[in-house]
Length: 233
Image 1 (cartoon, rainbow, N blue to C red):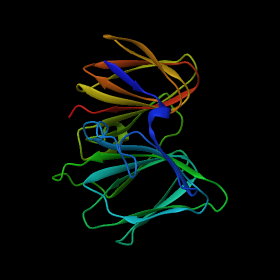
Image 2 (image 1 turned 90 degrees about the horizontal axis):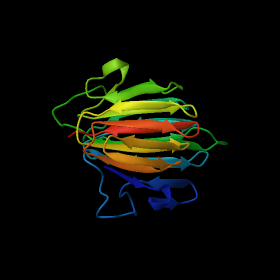
Image 3 (image 1 turned 60 degrees about the vertical axis):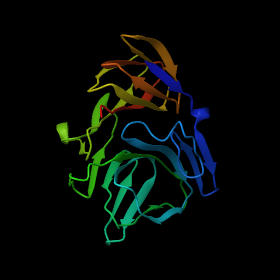
Image 4 (image 1 turned 45 degrees about the vertical axis):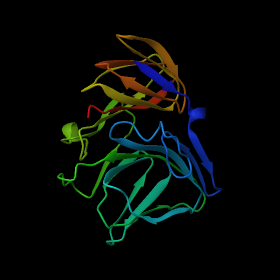
C-alpha cells in the first residue's frame, strides 16, 4: 500500500528568519493523525536566513539527523562541544538528557537549507555523541542503520535510511526489513511502485507512507534525490 502526501498538504511556517515545511506535527502545526510514523517523530525541511540561529533547546530521547542541502551549519551543546557540517554532509546527534543544543547558520550572506529527522532512540543504546557522513552524489547510499553497516551512521533504533541520487530514467529497488517505510522526495520527480500497488508519481517535497510491502522500485522521471526510511519497528 502506498499513500502519498503532497508537499502542499504539509504544515508550513514563515517567521522571516526561518521558513519551514513539516511532514508531521511540529511546533504550531498540529494534526492528531500525523504525530509521526512508527519511530520517525519529525521530518522537517527548513531554511535559515543568513546569520540566523535556533536557540538552545533540549530534546526527547531521540537521534537527530541533519542533512545539509545548502550552506554551512554549526551545532553546539551545553557541554561545550561544537561541530560544523556543510553542503553534502549529514550529521547525526545522539541527544542526551539534560543537555541543550543549538544550531547556527555560519554565513552572513547565504541561507542554510537542511532536512532534519528525529528518530526515537532506545535508552539502552549508547552511541558516539556526534557522527557525520558525506552524501556526495552516488546512485545509492546507506545513510544510517542500527549497526552502522557499510560505513553508515549508527542509529539507536531499528531503522535503515537510504539516500538515492538518480539520473533521469534511472531506477533502483530497495528491499525493506518490515511492514512500514516512508519515502521522501527531496527534489525532482519519480515514480514509486510495489508488487501490490500501482505506480504513483511524487514531485519535489512530496512524501509517501508505505505499508505491508517488502520492496520498493523507484524510477526517476527527472534528476531526483530522495530518502527511503525503513521503519520495521
